Length: 212
Ligand code: PRT
Ligand code: MG
Image 1: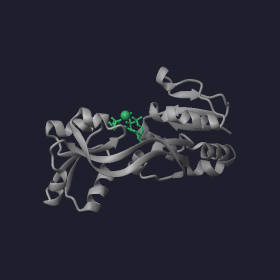
Image 2: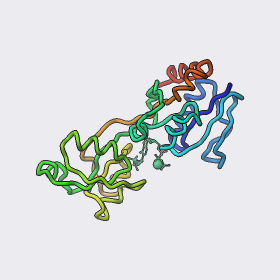
Image 3: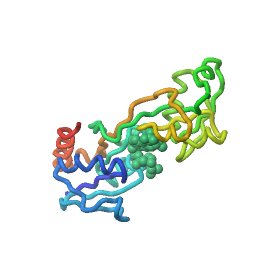
């Protein structure tokens, strides 16, 4: 019996290394320095696949990977079907927020019931947030660089992730509303949890003890 872990490269891979180490798992290489998409580990029964952050839940849902690590932002948009989410790992932390150009009076626009154009990669999250507040919005789906949209007149505001705030600042935007804190979670294929329980359970327990 063997298991496959789905990870995205970058911050999630880096912040997952200490958790994997706590479970006695050391990847054979860093995807940052290799083009390999399938990476071995020090354990013959554990492999890692490197996929796009937003694709991690899909690989785990269909059992192409048994477990994975994905941001709450990604999990909300995916919907979570077929996934067991036993642990908030408290890594890759940031916040989902509404941001607008400096000088745009967002609160006043909301108060007078203006219809706002919002650019975002997070359609479900944004739709739910504005619906709950009773704000009318036209959502414009983008796949990246949301910060550009208000600067070129594509949108009044954006819904995006913020961590240091440097990207907003560099583009003359400010956070006008916080939607929710975000961190990454361990996700497990529901069938694998039963069939591969003996190998998965110790890993889940080791992660749990290693969470900061
Ligand atoms: O990069 P790619 O398009 O392949 O996918 P991705 O952006 O979804 O993946 P990745 O690896 O960049 O992010 C993976 C996960 O890390 C996300 O799903 C989040 O849960 C989490 N995370 C934590 C972040 C950030 N912090 C973050 N700051 N994801 C993205 N950002 C971006 C943000 O979108 C904005 O463009 O960083 C920019 C803001 O950063 P600051 O520090 O300037 O505020
Ligand atoms: Mg990114």
